[in-house]
Length: 343
Image (cartoon, rainbow, N blue to C red):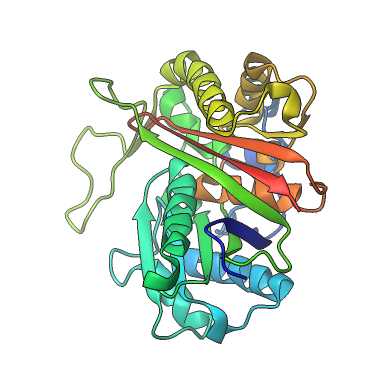
């Protein structure tokens, strides 16, 4: 049966190592555990590096492959069934080769189309949008099944043995906010065996004339520029703008489907931090929908988060139930989201 619709056959997730709680962070970096709990609202996170030795334990390739493998097993999909792979990330393992191609090789794929999108949290939505469009090609492309992955390994960019005393909040926040991980979905143009239908995807740049609220430099062999902070967060701007942007996204998604808030059984809000998620959920005002959030336990692992939310949603979403997901990226102000229905 051929359709122009996009179906989610399965989900997968991968988190590196054991969860790191705030007490462990306080011991390692000298931060106040209570401050992390109250200001950030994140209880635990997973790091792809060893906190004691600073050695990297997992690469993005490792995590993305594990998430995709889990999704493939759950869907009953073999390598020969896959037509394309899309990866959204802000932290590829290297500039070249692209991480998506290393993942494809690990998965035993060959003669398939591969795409790697570099962006922050919104990259996951961009990857879903591209995957949906690749399936929409139908008979023109022959694409019937694809794997879409989102993941980030942020901890490798942190200097774990530095003295954090006196660091500005815009830099200190990076040691407590972020985590590492990957998530994946198997998309299909066929409904057989699908868990849910991907109804709509919103992917939009809204940063014209706005200063970036998050900047991450990627230093080459020459090293960092003198006096330039490698990672910065304008948390005040994020707190001010993101809730309103999230409301805009939700309204656009609902209008596109002709849905009301009351039609939603589940809400997948932006996952910037535990504290920000609570603030945004209150602003969205979807009281009748169950919240599906993971960031307080996984940390902000960027492009993995919407896929980790989908992985948490999958066993909960019943036939006919509807869910809306919202993603906001503050680097240059991108808004995204998608809607799904249970089958």
